[in-house]
Amino acid sequence: MAMHGVGRTYDGPPPVAALRDCHLTVRRGEFVAVVGPSGSGKSTFLNIAGLLDTPTEGHYVLDGIDTGPLPDTTRTALRGRRIGFVFQAFHLVGHLTARENVALALLYTRVPRAERLDRADEALRQVGLAQRAGATPSRLSGGEQQRVAIARALVGRPSLLLCDEPTGNLDSVSAGTVLALLEELHRAGMTVLVITHDPAVAARADRTVTIRDGRLGR
Ligand code: ADP
Image (cartoon, rainbow, N blue to C red; front, side, top):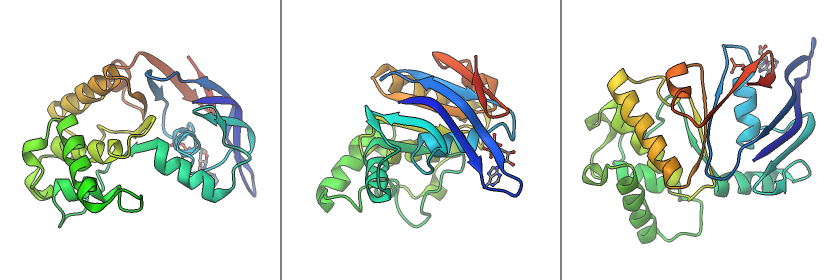
């Protein structure tokens, strides 16, 4: 992905320039952390990187596609196919098993039901939870729930894994397993972008970019 002079000003009054003149290129297979204090523009950055919002200035290019001119329906389809989201809160459905939670991410695709479940099992294997596929979230630890959420993000075979404070709800041991998993996915070729205010998370990335007052820096 690449941001070229991306800015995002929220309409006022008064207008708020939450992102200004951001330039960033994340190459395929890189693991990059974006670190900044509260109010620095991290959510705004995430929303643009995840195609949930559009810049008011500049260009956001994903997999070589300039996303600026795209109609909303195309942007939404692109988001569904190319981006896997991992949030601080796991957002799993309580009455569904891990396998069903992961398969749910393929519900609005053309993938037939039986294959959805097979793909969910494969994604759970990738995160080391194949043996827990039949468990509901309440039977899983926080770290396991986040790994299910990561499997759900992976099942659509995205080109970019976008993580928003992925360890924010976890104790240090679980945070360690989730971080190790992100590193492993990165080693296997996944592009990983983690937004965090935790320097320990950033320390594991190939590269850290800081965000401050809406500007990216080193
Ligand atoms: P962070 O995620 O780092 O806390 P945000 O991206 O949420 O930062 O916010 C960056 C700045 O933009 C803050 O000053 C915030 O108050 C402002 N902001 C965020 N969302 C809106 C909005 N919808 N309307 C107006 N201002 C906003």
